[in-house]
Image 1 (tube, helix red, strand yellow):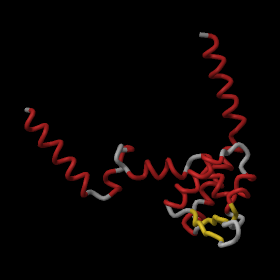
Image 2 (cartoon, helix red, strand yellow):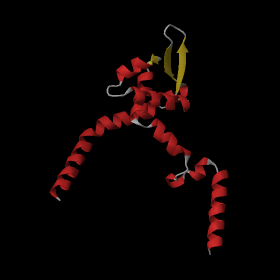
Image 3 (tube, helix red, strand yellow):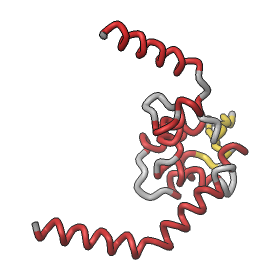
Image 4 (spheres, rainbow, N blue to C red):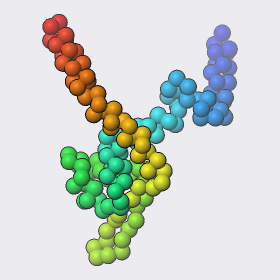
Length: 143
């Protein structure tokens, strides 16, 4: 019995290794690469950075001024993730002192419409979400 289970597990693992991502990504599988990508592009700072850069290239501090509450560390990490994923390009400006400018790439710009739709949904449904939160908190307080 243990041998059959081990063989089935090994077979599933080998199939998973060669299967196309779409086959591995059903039911939010733990090894699905889309989970990592979603985590890296759908967080609040990434969405805001891409939206800010939609207006044109900006230097680090200009981006930071547009994002109230972002720390230098969080913004640096966010920009690196976005650059690694091809959403943002980074250009070193050989000046004194050296400056860095960030710009949204065509791939990053392709997220503009989905983010805009999500933002619109947020604005349109905020009152309903607030009401649901109040009901939930009242129910929790009553128990």
